[in-house]
Length: 251
Ligand SMILES: C[S@@+](CC[C@H](N)C(=O)[O-])C[C@H]1O[C@@H](n2cnc3c(N)ncnc32)[C@H](O)[C@@H]1O
Image 1 (cartoon, rainbow, N blue to C red):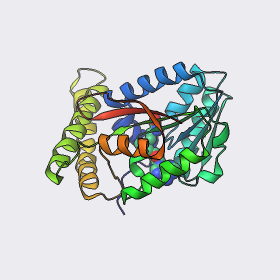
Image 2 (cartoon, rainbow, N blue to C red; image 1 turned 90 degrees about the vertical axis):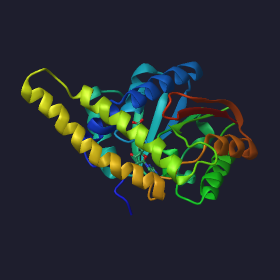
Image 3 (tube, rainbow, N blue to C red; image 1 turned 30 degrees about the vertical axis):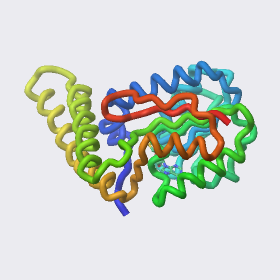
Image 4 (tube, rainbow, N blue to C red; image 1 turned 180 degrees about the vertical axis):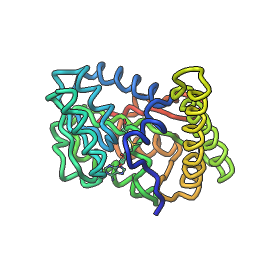
């Protein structure tokens, strides 16, 4: 099984959190959540907790449950929670696909930001997950899925090109984010972090192309399947040229 995720907060931050794609996705999700003003929401696949923590601060009347499979990430989230002293978010170490564990009938909004792609092949598993989720959600509740999607009918070569573009773009963000000055030492540090990031880049492209741990679907697939399951598709818009897209679905 591929090592497709990051083990430390520092690694995650260097690699993912500060990329333009991530920041733009989080800003847009924050805007959408402020439109809905949920009383109770669940984030599935909360990673280091950055998004749920931000949403909790921005929406003090919203109760948030954030779920991640990795104990380490939940540990980091709890540390951050302690530092930030926010009381309206709870971090839970669990598998998001075990839907019976969650109080979905009470949630006004479910968020999956860069986590939907981890539901393994075959695609029917994602379809069954959506069906199960739909059946447990309350009428009118929203499901927001923000992730990277493929083009319909993309060949392995197309997927490789798309993911290379995506991850090389991210590594340039990482270079600029880690440049803290113009001294020789500062510039060397930024290049060093970028080099480490590029090693991950190669892996990330390979995992996506080989469908080893990361299982992208096309926008068209999600649109069609969500409708089939019964969701109204309110939005399914790209955020950028790297094919990150936000879907807003409603029961
Ligand atoms: C890219 S991170 C998500 C980042 C996070 N949503 C944010 O906004 O910062 C994807 C997360 O999904 C989690 N994940 C993957 N499969 C999961 C599952 N079956 N149940 C719960 N979490 C899962 C991973 O552990 C990982 O932390």
